[in-house]
Length: 261
Ligand code: ADP
Ligand code: MG
Image (cartoon, rainbow, N blue to C red; front, side, top):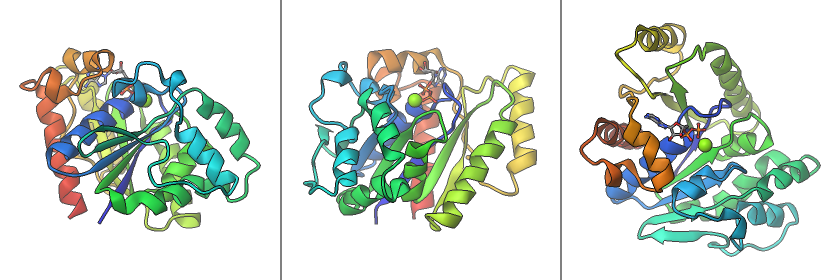
């Protein structure tokens, strides 16, 4: 059984890409075959995975989207980079922002990514989609094909309002486009337990949403090492294997595997 997980929050800088990279690597460590999909024109995921010049890539997710929109044939590994054993990447670059515009007038524009991923999902145990910081058509495409959505929330500002809007979008997509969509969980990231502010936010989100939607047991701690991994294009397990962020992402991987069972 393959599982598609979208990693989404319309706020930028909350740890979506970092969580995608390290959850993906964690799943690969557990022997799972994983495809990472970069659905952000900023291409942070592509960069974090070591592809330093995304604008020079021959094919990206944009070409896949264009082919689907034009009803073209797509070979199963078109555009996919084989990063290492069991780990593939469908990269992005700035062209994706133009694709977003072209989708507006396409037929079944919300289902373009699903049309493609349905063809290849059985080749993978997990497909992780790193969404851009908006609730636009690309993010809706990710939600329309996902089995679940993982919502990173930075415990350093008051996220409740933005969360309401995101959850509303998730339920709208579930109702209209994809009734199997579930919320994998809210994941607190960059948590600094020494501050009362972080504790207040965690408890407020728990109070407001805890009964309605799952919240991951594990919190990702604030960690300088974690913030350095993005520049180094390394996973937290390679860069600081004994650190607290590595062990948190390890536990997150276990929780996600548990949900999939
Ligand atoms: P998003 O994809 O939501 O925009 P990123 O994953 O790119 O967020 O993270 C935003 C910034 O925060 C990056 O510079 C990243 O290195 C940093 N960061 C991510 N996780 C942590 C963490 N646990 N502790 C400290 N900094 C982090
Ligand atoms: Mg990102």
